[in-house]
Image (cartoon, rainbow, N blue to C red; front, side, top):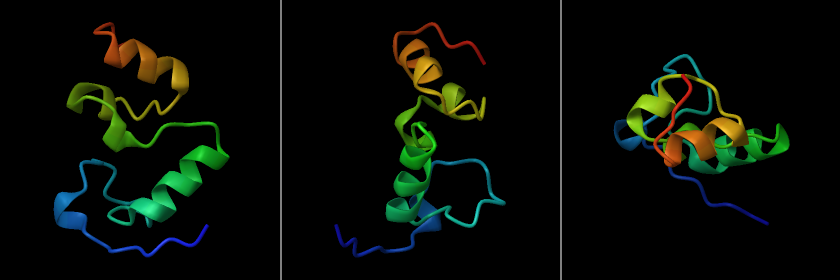
Amino acid sequence: MECVATTSKAHCSCSYSACDKRGNCCKCVEYHLKNGEIPGCFFTPAGEKSYDRSIRNFISDRSGQATG
């Protein structure tokens, strides 16, 4: 699949500012999926700040039981 990416750091909700994929959704999603993870923008603000991108933490975060 070809992705036409638009870099938009101003709208990126990821708080890991050192990430080279920050603001480039296509690269971010590809990276996290390859690692069996969920991108930070799918989490609640509190869940995102835990930096735990695991599927388990995502489910916990979205069900109101964030572990981080």
